[in-house]
Image: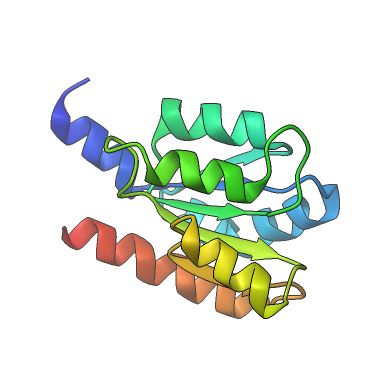
Length: 138
């Protein structure tokens, strides 16, 4: 794969990692408008699959739940941000953990954004579109 093909893949894909099936379905529905614009969505339900998908697919954006089986979202985020080949991936921690301590921990492991559930679907779509446009401009 050429560098431009890698960049194109990076700019046009989103990973959604959450162990709650209803959240995965809702996020997929919220972001399906982007799929119509050529954005590929990857959905996984645990931290191990999130990390392996991040390494293999290198999405531009990740919506990452904190409380997941196998590896937590905090652990996945730290591993990604510590890896020079992956650290440009934009990570949004999307979680029910809304305490200040949790937010601080998320920022400490390198999250680019911390959002709490319940979320507003329009806000998710707007944020995703903005991040993908910013990534495409780099």
